[in-house]
Structures are given as structure tokens and as C-alpha cells.
Image (cartoon, rainbow, N blue to C red):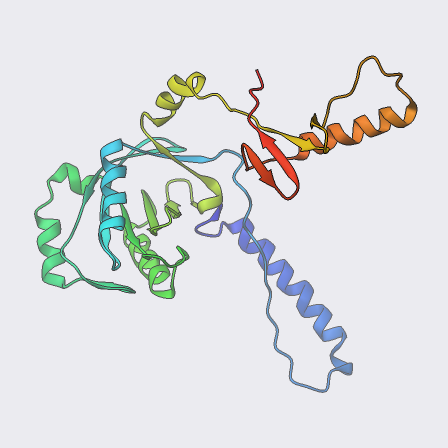
Length: 275
């Protein structure tokens, strides 16, 4: 997250950094035989202490996924959003405008866009705070065109409101850019949690029904199968035996076998339930 507009304190801090660097350049000027160009870089970004949650209705999320999956070109859409509180946004519907697309670009005609907005109800127009498009199989990083579009849309909002931009791809990667003008904060994907309504409840209901079955390797010694973390309890245990047992136990804990009921790389694997 970072501020959308710099406060007076931010401007003063940046100005002081500039003066400090300028003074240093002047002090070193006598040793500089080339022209001097002065610039100051500063970082206003920080990780949000509390994540922003964007919750979708199942229908809205499925519609967005369907658009991305069905079209092998880029495709764009709008979303209707309600702000629940400062850190929670609720996306409940999807709207699509007529568009002209290829594998790397989405274009719209002015008359089509005008018709789209004229057909919205007042309530829909008041909740149209979301737009997204797909990058098909490419990265979800914003292009220069994407960033300029974000800048133009946010500029038209003035100093209040919010707007969510997203870029999706067929790998189910979602990149979010959220401009919260009411609080003068910009959030990127590091600050945002994507949530689909009802999914957490479903997972909680079935969690106890899904039991992990662990598999441990058995090694063939030539005269039988030896479970590689076991030992004979009647045998006298020495310090060497204990060290060996510890190493074998560590090996077992780190081992993640993927072969069942057969040989692989000199080891025989057999299913074993671990209750």
C-alpha cells in the first residue's frame, strides 16, 4: 500500500531529501568533471497491516472465470461493487460492454461505450467501481496502456470514492490494483485477499471427511522387508544404535514417497495407514 496523493508532510520530507542530496552534490562538485544531473528517489510503499478483502458472490466469480476460460483472446468486463466497510468490498454482478479484441488488446468504440452506460440503471451506475480484463496465458502484470487507463479512470473520480482494477489469466492468477480515494490509499496484490462467498463454509463442512493417508517406505534387505524406522526392542541399545535410530527417524520424517506397492530406486514401497 502507498498514498495516492502526497500529503503536505510527505512533500516536506521529499523536499528535505532533495536538499540533502543537492548539498552533497555541491560539496563534491569540485571533483566532478562531467555535467551533474540531480534526482531523488523515495519509497512510500509499505505492507498493509490489515489485508483488504474482496468478496465475490459465487455467480459473479464464476462468470469472470468463464469469460477468461472461454475466450482465447483478451476480454474485458465491469463489476458492480458494494463497500461493506473500510477494508471489505463485495462484488455481486458482472457487466460486459461490446468490444473488439485480439490476443493482446481490447478496444471499444465510443458509441458502444455510451450505449453501455446509458443502459445501466441508476443503482448499477452508482455501484460500477470495478473493471477487469484477461491477459490470456500471459503474465498479469499491468502494461503501460493498463496503467494509463487506471490513471485516467481514477482522475475522473475526483477525491472521493474507490475503484478496483484486476488482470486475470488462464492460470487463475489475479492481479489487483485498488484505489481507495476516501482514505488516500492505493493497495496492490500484496495487500488484498480474494474471497468467494460460501467457499470457506463448504471447506469447513468437509474438512473432517478428507483424511491424509501417509505412506512409509520398506527397504528390501535380501532376507525380508525392514521398516526403516523400526528396531528390535529385545536387542541391547548402544549409543551408536541410538544415533542410527535418530538419523533413520529424521530420514523418515523428511521423506515424501510418491510410489506405492513396488520398487523404485532400490526401495520397495508398501501402503501403510497412519492413524
